Length: 286
Image (cartoon, rainbow, N blue to C red; front, side, top):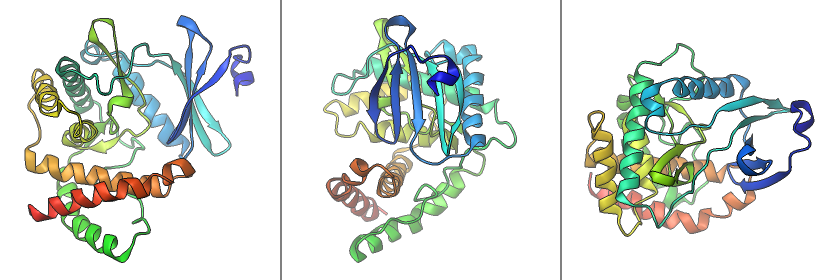
């Protein structure tokens, strides 16, 4: 692949191996990022991702709020898609996330949603987020867990179907591993690999799902909402957000249990108790 692109002289280093494999090509300010998908995907789906990234890069409402990687090349090698993009500078934040940072994330998410509202091309070949298991089969579970999660999916399914009656493009994976900050708290957003049709509330729920255990969660949540509302109306409420947090947990359970990476599948025993508690708490409130 590097030879085909004329990049064989650039140093190649693995950055992350998880849902996809991510590499750094070159060093310094001329670095590039190479993503190789570990899951099978169609050329049409990859082309749709690239088309939306390019459209967002041309929308000044979006670029005023965030930096985006520029796609340099993309294609398929065998059955695996790949995407080569410009390097997005900045630092990922976890425990050091601040309300000011989440304000920027909320505002950027609103800009993405407003841009998507005017960009909904027919035949955009991405999935719709209207399935309780994320469009995957129910994973193998013990009878007790299967019964518990079946009760949840029966109640979640009509919620998701109603939400997605008039869907728009979403990032659909906007957690803190997919945004970074550089000097002046300038935000950068990357990895549109999971982009999909859905409701804006699903993007917001995904962002907050990963922050629930943060010691400053309440302040981060409020700042995220304030940032979003600086551009448009907040599209959800606490009850819907709780439902979508459970939906996110179920989609992760399905994705991890069927992933080709053994290190991801090995995490299920440690994560299943958390998803079980979440499911029981959600059902008790219904």
